[in-house]
Image (cartoon, rainbow, N blue to C red):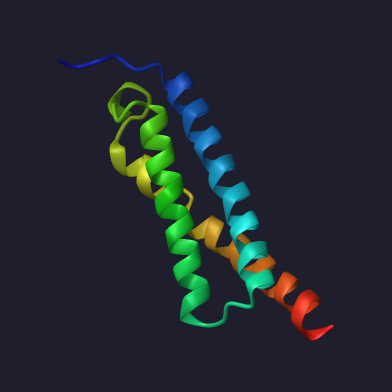
Length: 101
């Protein structure tokens, strides 16, 4: 059965998911920097955090993402690259502060 979604509510939900991903990207970057992760291990940290974020958002919707979002891949992948830029920024910043200075 199809569910009518309010465009305003869907946009609000996507905005909240974007803010969660951005915040988690910053936190993950700081953690990767403190732990001294370099190269592929740092990026694996990011992918793991984004996987957990997607699973957390899906769990928050009780795995019925179609009731809150227009498609499941918006929950899984929306804001992925923007979060990656924030992650790399804080990863390098915290790594430099902790391990170089």
